[in-house]
Image 1 (cartoon, rainbow, N blue to C red):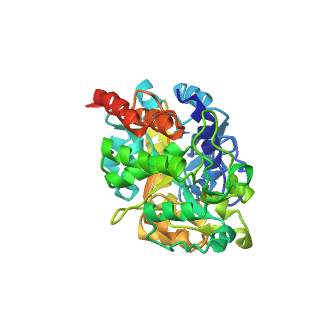
Image 2: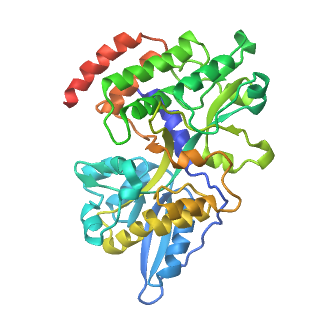
Image 3: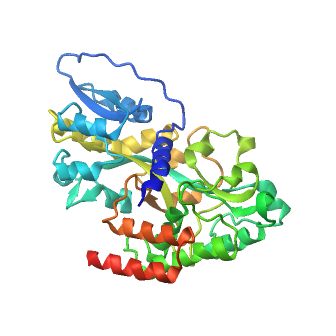
Length: 404
């Protein structure tokens, strides 16, 4: 029932590989120096986004050489992990499956033994746990940023807050920026990924950081977006197969979301307006992001060294290296954040509130037998207009009872 999401998930997958700065292709020797250990890392395609970490690690670890092994599909990486072809692997899409198959090392003992501090990763660690195990750690993210068409906003006399934007304000602005009908209609907002995901950020924000989403949070979020679509008509409804045409790029919608990596590639004079992520009163906003994570193969010949590299990659050293290369770091310390803000060229002005938000990773696979799968089914039915919020919530509550 979620087949229609696959193109979106694939698009997110490809967006995550986008480099903020074009990294050169690495050429590595095929044989180590005497006493060196070679670590093989399974990456998607060229995996150039890992280069800043590899360079920083090898600069301080003469006895280790890190070699990337490129794959095109998750199935290829899965097979390489099983046979021990790689010591570490990109866990972007199938880390949970690796745990169930027994092919990923449980990182919890390593974390305890080396006293690796996971607290700066916050609730992102929830996405790296399954069945009581930690199967991977994140290296960087690519957040979705709320942007707007400056000309349309100025013409409507709308003022976008620099910070502290609320969901109610976003709805009011979208209403003011919606006008006309048919093929010439101007929309207040248009999305290039499924609205179901954005609605879930509101449910997460209503629940509060680190707290489970309750049915009342889901209901409030779905009512908000149902109103945007079918009462205000300021946001195109979701569609059965693909997201609606991105009217924003046609100059026919005022607000949309773009990835930070996309914004970093735009010339200064082509940058859109950047709005803060919306939040309720006294609540912390939630930002969706694509996330790249790595795990250690259970078949690795050098699991201890693989862990040392992963701890470097996911910890403050790797995060600082990624920040200096322009990538969005997830190891949230003041020093790492400052390194990201000080990079040249600097991040687009106005994205600073994203640093203070709660980050939520867009999942790359969704099963109908999970709470998120149940939510996505309900949201799909509501945001395509197939059913009412009341009816969808009755089904949602019944389906969620299996997880109690």
